[in-house]
Length: 166
Image (tube, rainbow, N blue to C red):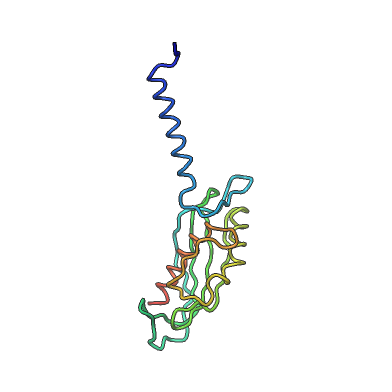
């Protein structure tokens, strides 16, 4: 005779399914594991604040199918939430008149050491990923092992695109 009632079996099964579902959902949307030994990573959602340094060299009117750009240097700050809290990353991009990135600089502005490490790695490798490419075609996901700093970077790029088309 079994000591487990059907209700108890159902409860155990439901708990197991819920646990597996939550475990599977933990990795959704992440392209690499950036966890450190203290359990934090630079991950999350994005927000942006506009910080334009202006632009120079007026556009000659040429542009792509997706719009014209004004050549110049643009700044923006992208934000995202990591397990360590809200993080920011500064982005400065120089564009030519057709929207091609000619220079990029990322300034780590993390509020914790783990996120700062990931942002610094990202900053060290981003130029190889974006210089020479059209800004409106960028969709950075992972740079130098840092997949989540890209959320703040992409957010800042969206802001810079708006500035450069204005």
